[in-house]
Amino acid sequence: MTEENFKPFPKNPSISKVFREITYSEELGSGFRKLNEYVPLYSGKNVHPEFIDGDMFKIIVPLYENYSADEGINEGINDVFDFISQNPGCRVPKISAELDIPEKTVERRIKKLKEENKIEYVGSNKTGGYRIKKIDLEAKL
Image (cartoon, rainbow, N blue to C red):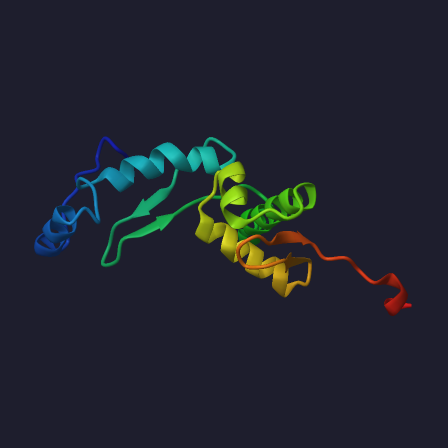
């Protein structure tokens, strides 16, 4: 299926209309165009998604070699960790603003770093901030 022979039609017109009215979906067929535009950028090569229209509509999205779903997550956590290490005592709003990511995302990444025992919050709720947790090497020996 290509853009030339693609003719969008809603499988359920009533539900499709409701989703467009409440802005949960865009115009009919916009996802098809966006996938064709953005998949080559994210797959790392000049490829396009494969669309299979049958009883169930399927899309096969080729990804670049050595792709890992955790790659983006770990990279984001590492960005927060690096920022805290360079800016001890920083708080979520500052991390969010400097890294240009939503505060909720920063909070999730901080939660993960705290679970891994890599960072800690020091000080009061109002004036405290995050810092890299110091490792007691003598206790480990």
